[in-house]
Length: 204
Image (cartoon, rainbow, N blue to C red):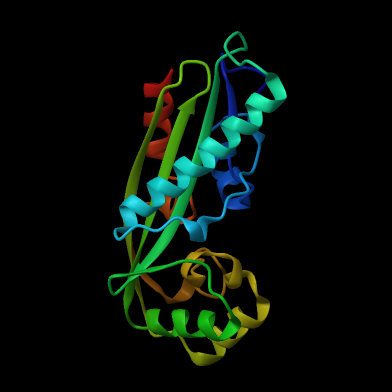
């Protein structure tokens, strides 16, 4: 696939490796910009509202960064900015990244033999036309019992400390204990392919 094979540019507003991987799998070439926003400053009652609000705030931050770089953006080639956010919902509570190893342990212990959900948003902005729209997607995840020593290994290894709800279902240590995923893996990993495709089409 040659460079610039799509008639528009894509900026992924996230430095998350899983999101980069998913967008690359979709066949897109893109550049990455991250938004340095204080996500904790954004509060909403409902997880669906929260993930849209955070993704929108990320998009706003990146758009203003771009304005500083480019001055005016109107005459550039069509540019689509994709921002996203994901939270885990467990027994009605919104879970973000664990604040400590202890909290990560409690989070994962809670999933053992139980279930949780991820609510993920995709927020697409057409930098040239000003079109902006976000949508969300929810996936239910059911677990077998997870042995304490597996939780211990996960927490020690540490990747779980950097993800919402301490949840990485594609992790080799946790995969064997996933009973059922109702929804798509890409959505759980941070970027729903279906939503991304749909919103890019609408934005162009």
